[in-house]
Length: 59
Image (cartoon, rainbow, N blue to C red; front, top):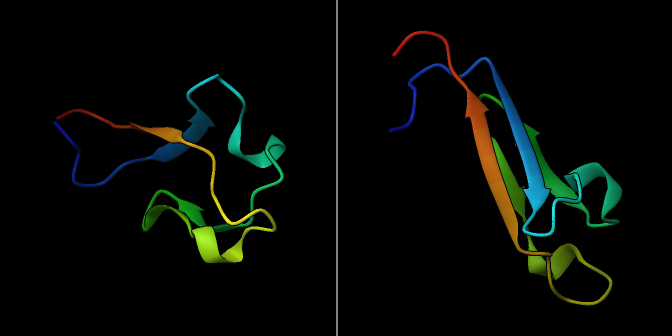
C-alpha cells in the first residue's frame, strides 16, 4: 500500500547503493514527485535498477 502524503523518500540500487552515490543523473527524487531516472540522461545509456521506499505517517 502506498501512502497518499509521504513524509520522505529513499531510493537505492538493488545492491543497496544510495541513489546519490551511483553517478546516475536523477531527474526527480523527492517525496512529492517520486523518483525518476531517465536512461537518455545517462553517460552509458542506462539507469541502475532502483528500489524506492516512502516514509509514511499513519495510514
